Image 1 (cartoon, rainbow over the protein chains, first blue to last red):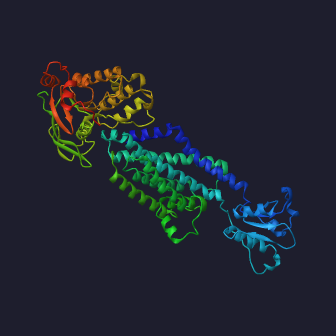
Image 2 (image 1 turned 90 degrees about the vertical axis):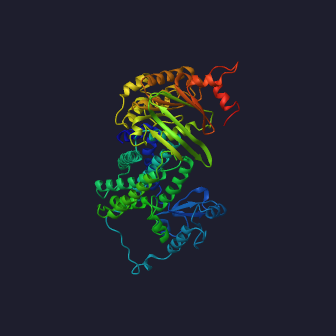
Image 3 (image 1 turned 60 degrees about the vertical axis):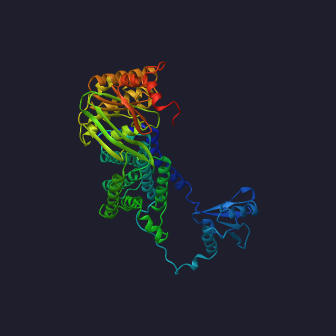
Length: 345
Length: 245
């Protein structure tokens, strides 16, 4: 088993292209999002204005309500002609269009644009005197550290990278090894299926934990992530999650010699997991059916536990349910994978 | 065959693939210390027969006896196999590949000895995906010899090699044979079978159609005047001259 473990590690580290991509990919994703969310944070809503001559936009000279000019998260986009601006509105390039003429506030919206619907309310609200709100509404801010999107996203990117590496690095590779006869060669030796699968499992889990640590360190240097929990606790969660995803990879690899079919199956499993397990965005507003379906996916429990520790400072006992689910799923996947495993079929 | 006890014996062996009978009631007994050749045209069932004997694929019916009994957990410790088509673990050198496989066995020859025996000294630090076809075949043979096997299966060990590389492989096989090891060899090369084998069986359409020593077969089947006195003539006479899949 030790010999197979060593051989698999050699293969991973000596395949420079694959190794480099495993490290580089999450860096690039996190760096890309870092740039997007640091330089373009005021562009959540786009408000078009026409006519504005020669694209010279002097905010104070526009005939718009003064309060509207001060709102955060609204980018004002100038147009020379109405036709050009309406075309952009029709194609969702802007969310609302205002005429640059006073004193009447004249605007156009695209009924199929939800952002336009909200922005219309904001535009109309901007002409109401502020004093009307006093004594009718109370504003309060949350206390303590606020979680940046990049801090929320980071565990998701690491989890996604582990998921792809586990499914493709184990599932796809074993199926390819079966097709080209490597497994058949191993079957001709005293090596048992249990020894082979265990070596694959241990090697992949260890490699993924090491490469995730390298990515973590690099990203921490670049973006100063806020870690609220214990590193040891998060290591336990990452171990459980990686173990579970690699075990799932072994299930996918237990039979078959068709790499294209395996590729399709892995995509069929990994893409829904990527969206439903909240790698990129929350599914808080989704239907109950979607939320229940998400709970069947190992990545959901992995990321829930990781985010609770990293973002909220939870302890291992706070995430014991998620860890227990991941370990149970791992056992089930390992059992199915080893029972169905074939060296040659 | 010699008078030595049987190393491996099969009785009424059968194998079907999707309704097609690939192996149809084969019986063989291979004496210890002999070099036994299994010949036949493409699709005759040679590889299927050998892989059932190797315990790589299951047989549908029949009996396979190793040293007079059922094959048990020690079988894989005592046999060596060189497959016709196989890839190796990626990104390992020749020496690392041999060391990795050596670790699978309870007892094995020193890796350096196998490297020397298979003339791999000059390429032992080379990656396995960067060696030539002949070097690759010698490495595959080396892997089959690592555990100093009592029974060695060689499935077309010299197919696709140039004459020099083939001769190298033959020399190694003859050396192993001299050490008293039992060898089961499938081949398309009649010259190879004539040079290496004590006994041969010719298969066609899943059945054994003739068996004996190369000399006795030539003597029996090449009596006519003008018939070349070699195994190829015997082979063509028994299996026909038409093309096979």
